Structures are given as C-alpha cells and as structure tokens.
Image (cartoon, rainbow, N blue to C red; front, top):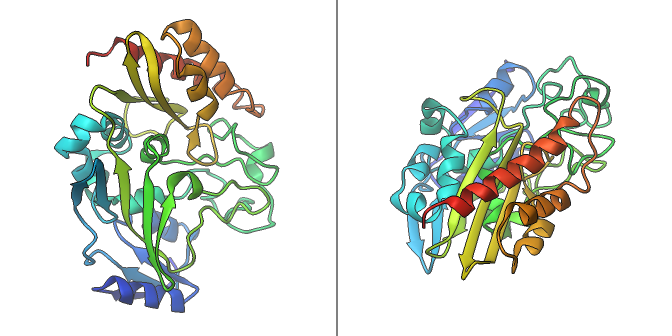
Length: 328
C-alpha cells in the first residue's frame, strides 16, 4: 500500500475544503471497498480524509419522503421500520447486497460510490481504461461473463455493482451534496455517467464534493414492491441480474410501474420503456414478457455474457409475477 496522510475532520466545510485543495485526496467512511483497492494498488490517495465524525447520520421523514444521511450504515437503513413498510425494494436490496458484517460498516454514500467489481479494473497488471485512461480494456477480449450488456462502449463493459442503486433509480431518489460552490440536489437518473470515451468519469461529482444525504420518495400505500437478485450462489455474491420493481394495481389494471435493472449495465438502469408498456395494462405473464423484451431490446452482449439477455428477461418477468401474487 502506498504511504498516505491520514486526517480526521469534524465539519463538512473542513472536509470539503481539504479534499478540494488536494487533487490526490480521498474521503474515508466505512472503507469496505476503498481499503481493499488501496491494498491492491488500484487506488493511491496521498491524503485520506476520515469523515466518520461528521453529522451525516440518521433517517428522517418529511412530506412523504425519507432523508437518509450519507454516513448512515446499510444495516441501519435496512432495519428502519418505515423502509421495511413503505420501501420493501430498498430493504431487500440492502439485505441481499452484503453480509451483516459489511452492512454494519458500509455507509449509504459509500455504497453509491463503490467501484466496479470488474477483475480487470481491480488488477493493476491488466489493461483498464477506467483505472488508467487510454490503456485499453482487457475485458473486451478477455473473460467477461459478469460484465455489462447495456450502456457499454468500446472502451468499457464494467458492470455497476450496487444493489441499492437499482432500487433508488426506480424510485427517482435525489442525491444531496456539498462542495465549495455550495449545495446541490442531483436527480438519481442524472448522477451516474455512461462510460463512452471516458470510463474513468463515473459520476457528476466534482473533486472534493461530498454526498451529504439521499432523499427517497415513499411509495404510496398499497404499492407492491420488491427486489429480486439472481446470482451464482445464495449469499455474498454480486448479481448476474437483478430487478427492483414497484407496481400499483387498481381495479385489475396497472396504474403505476417502476422498474430498475441491475447486474447487466454500466450504470443503474431504469426500464422506462417497460414501465410505459405496463401502465394501463392488465397484469399477466404475456404483458410482463412484452415489457421484458422491450427492456433488453438494446442489449449488446459479447461471447461470455450473452446468456444475460434471456436471464434478465426472465428475472423481470419473475419479479413482476411475484408482485402480482403478493398480498397487499
């Protein structure tokens, strides 16, 4: 591990000022991903700014929305009674996202900023445009079974790893930040950046800008909501495919549908075309399959991950059927 300076801050303004002044500075919260990457030589900050003492914890409710402090742990959010009752997809995404030990350490802000699990990114001996711009992408011609089939480019096919982000993209969450220029409220759909020609740019945060909270709209009472994750083994594994779904069914018709797709895209993926197909339709397997086909119409699979196209379609259908059969 490269030598670094460790600094503990006590105010948000101090944290932002220190990080912004040093281009090689990084924030440290739970550190469940960051420390591993530092040990492997993937990350090498000159200054590590410990933000764990900042007043950015807790969950509050106001006007039909939850505001979750960025330093609130995954476990705290997962166990919150309001989340369990009104946001089952968030509860389940967190439950399936990590072991209990990691959930007790990892923060909500850190979860949203976690780096890809692509083995080429995490091995400094491999070519990776995300880690070292213009060096090439070893995954394209290498083994890419776990990699993305949506939102890819000729420069990067790394999959976004967060389960929570799949639920939050479906819920139209808002990310609140603080930087030298003041505060920002960033719609979740605008937060992540497709790799295109610049895979090393993963989100719209400026250097030193700090996530302070995540605002999540509560689902209306009576909404059927859940998160389905398909993976190689039953625990502590990243998704091959996953779906966050919320359905409001009234008088035998789908009044509202929200869908997020994970495990298959370079960013959390909102299925707006599928949602449009579902709204106003009578819920059955046929319309669910039609929506799933539309959701994967633009997939660009490669040699090892072509199976994800059909698997994702089946995951969407299964999640929707589960919601249809759920008690409300």
